[in-house]
Image (tube, rainbow over all chains, first blue to last red; front, side, top):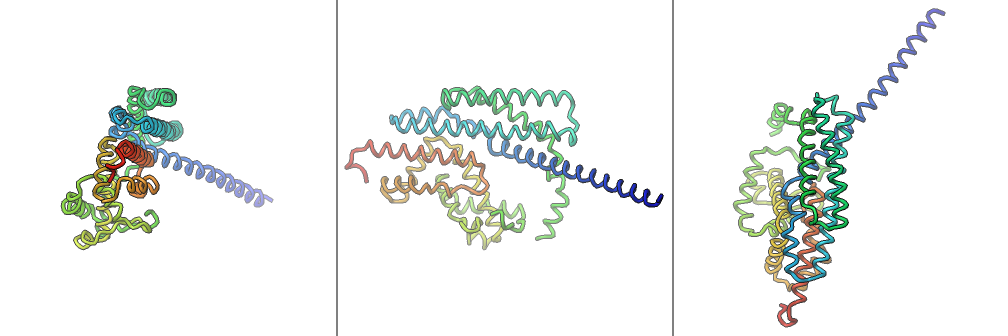
Length: 191
Length: 155
């Protein structure tokens, strides 16, 4: 009887351990997903959405002036419509990618990097400022067209860039540069 | 493009191949638009890999492919940030070099939108959409100019 109780006890412990491990692995998977999304969001922002020349070009007033010299109402309407569409797509994508970074900072960042309370507060302020700027810009683009708010565009891009800089530091441990000696070795053996 | 992974070519070789391509070939093509179309034409639609016999003979297939892809991305970036006025000029000059009539050219480009297949793989979607949008506007400008000309003056 004592042996049976002993084995039941061991079995129960094993079952608990299994449940614990299952919970842990699903959390790790979730964390990996958040990390991956944050890395992708950062890449999309830095290389796709925030380069200064691209932002300048999308909202460039000189293109509008050039189109005005063509003296064609149809071309002007097409131009305004197209730029409004691209401008809105830009704001929406910046907001979506920054939201992915926000999820990372809310859930996982503190486990991987030691952020000071001051930095966390700074990030929270940037997120808040960016949310307000994105919403304002969306409304202005709808109502006033693509060239009505260059300052709000600049504020949005600057706030997003600051969030990228902080997130870059938080995600630095994922950089492949840290693996360069091994990568160099495998490359040299390949050739 | 992502289905098959090329062997990792050495970075220095790719850099040399890129310089070679710029010096011997791309420097002969004056406008970014022409360079974009040329580089896109070097890409196999079925595999997404670039081929250039001369470059592959001097380096290797893989290195040539990487160098062409790098140059393609670079030219794309140049074109995305160029002004609308510049794009219209480039499009007009390109049209002149094709020896088609303006009407034929505009009809074909508006219907087929060949610029959509001229962008590099893994391009940021917003940049690609922005360039397509600029092409659309540039074609509309050229068309408006064509309509404003007296009938007899159209080649």
